[in-house]
Image 1 (cartoon, rainbow, N blue to C red):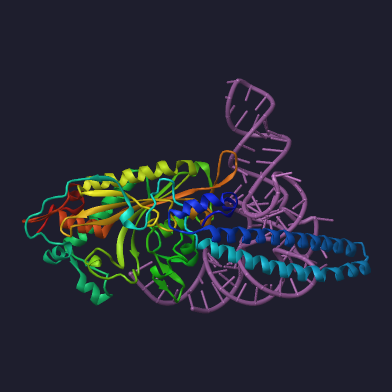
Image 2 (tube, chains in turn orange, cyan):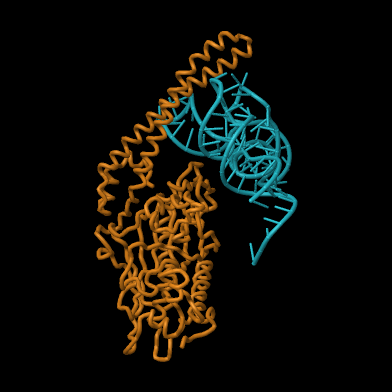
Length: 423
RNA sequence: GGAGAAAUGGCAGAGUGGUCGAAUGCACCGGUCUUGAAAACCGGCGAGGGUCACACCUCCGGGGGUUCGAAUCCCUCUUUCUCCGCCA
């Protein structure tokens, strides 16, 4: 959520910046400003009314104490009007504030100046590429064929138990998956992150805090009996741990990592691009979340990007890094780098990580602040990134490491799997 | 799931209808003393809105009510603790 005080002072900057997202902000920002003005003037009026009735109440108290009951009763009569007026004003204030909030929820974050203008993923900017695309033998297979051939993942079984998009991992498939999770966590801990285990269901407030609600309501599974949501990413519980907190400067930066399954309804997805592990309703992911001082956030973003690069280098997977264009940038993000692994057998890039700086967009909603050296309270910057999302890494490994003898296990994983070949 | 008790500032903990945003202690920050530190002493120290700055307003778990006036009384929800039941 954008900060109204800033909008008030820099409306034109906001309008221009949001154009990169193809978001026409002029009129909506004007509405925001006028609602905010109304809000403030209503607040002032209410304050004055309350001040007056507070004064009278005090007077009444004093009069009763000194035994002047008659006088007191007379003053009492004056309070009725004030009471009614303040009731009206506070109702108006609530309505205006609510309206203002609803409006603010619909405005996306302003993109960082380095974000290229653009319509969709076609316009993303490739900023880095590494690794040779392996030349595979004749008859190499996509991962869903490999998963079947070596009995690693059973999609049919998942259909039976739950439905499409809930695969069952078996044998060496399950162990490879577990190895990857442990390896990712270890890498993150080594880089200074603290590991957490967090709830997989969250309340409505948490959903709003990180911006899944109301924007992506349909994306989350909703447990209606208890009004809870299955997390679409551990970003939600991780970031919400700090909701409403006023941190000490020395506590920053806060770096968390967690492994969790993620649940996404992915309503409306279908076709070849969702085959196999490409898109699932339940998948595993290891996530990074950073809370930092504003002046440090872009350096932190760079560090996160380097960290993910490092992991992919370890795994010897060919990958590229994209700077997302305005049209493809997530609602809450100011700058996002996507990582994609090249799937040789599918002959396409698969997104496996997304690393973003949200600046104050989340922290403003979440009210996560810290006291700086001067004792002034400031919103922290929040960042997150996947390191990494499991299914597509799994797909990439299966497809790129296939040989005539079977699927080799990347060297760094062997200590975790306990085997070096799947055959 | 049943019975009872509780929820106050970073923490502990007073406060049961009026001058209470809230005693006191600890923690924290600044100062005096000291070569330095500790101790002692002095001062400061919750959050949000609003203002150039004050003023002023709001907040004692959340919501609602009674009252001229609520941390304090009533209703309701949530959470925590104790006892019982069930259980990985």
